[in-house]
Image 1 (cartoon, one colour):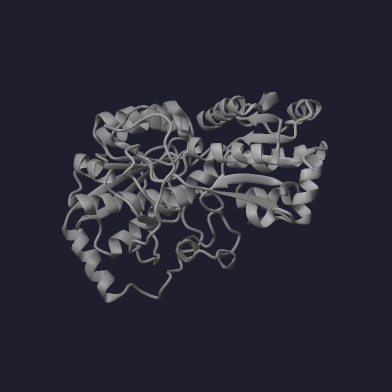
Image 2: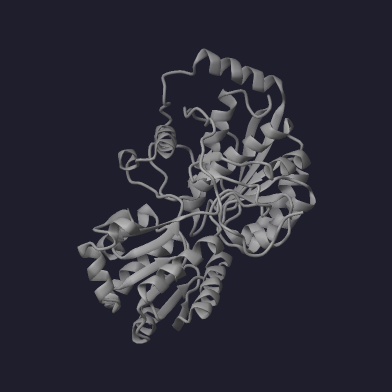
Length: 432
């Protein structure tokens, strides 16, 4: 049985052989209100598949099919992150099949639009299992959708990798539901420890109303209480709102030293710009990655935004200095003509890598065998680094870095500490 509650942080780093990163086009689409977006560029990473790749693909076709359902928000406010996640899953599908599939079976990914709505996620879960006979699930990046549908997958003994970052859905005791991306509850203590180190006494919070946003604020509230840090005001907004002037005015009038922002990616540049426009130039922390598209939209207003996370998104392949991520980004760009603007692509791709590793460790595509094998995996190399599932909590990641934006560029906190940008933000926060 799975362990529940607060987890300890431990992970070891080593390298597992990664999937060869080549790209091609095509794929299956099912369910939801829209079909998967066609790639803007179908240029392959190489002129044609190698002879070995063709042979592996033929072998996979002869071994039957392994059907993976991918429910993501493909319409609505969070369509862009959902599309990035689906693109990454489809990229992994093609790479796996070029190598012979999963245990000799051809991987078939079916995509579904959950619209970011919990009730739609439940409907799709029923369809995926009863009609389309999906054997594994990758998604959704909306935590409330994973929370609403997870029990259906778990009861059916379908290995499921949710791609949202809320702790809530991994606290349900579901033995067939896993995560290969960040659990915010594991990262936020690192954030509060940094505040204690800086001598922070007062913060304000700004949050959405989805499960991940609410859970983030709840965790920060609990940690701040333990640390003796006062929350001067807690402001929220409804999905779809873009004018936060009322909330920002209340935040600034409460005189916080730091603002904690618990929102999904599309809201990040809006709140960043409005905070700066209204005069708050101090330190802000987001509940997870401050996305590269938010940085591009908000520009200088992004300076002083910090977060704890395992990786970054990039505006060009050359910006990335991690060879494994760089290889993924090159393949993604060759496939779709652009880089992923959301880390939901990373989350989904890593989930596919772990699913494949578990199936190979089990020597089977049987759901129960795969679920048991996940708990034996360690040192699985992914975009987020080495993942370790042997802690018994169904989570692969337990260590993170603190990044910050300065001069409209990402850097680690340690490199930022002591710079002119650091001093300016600390002074604006009243922490100098």
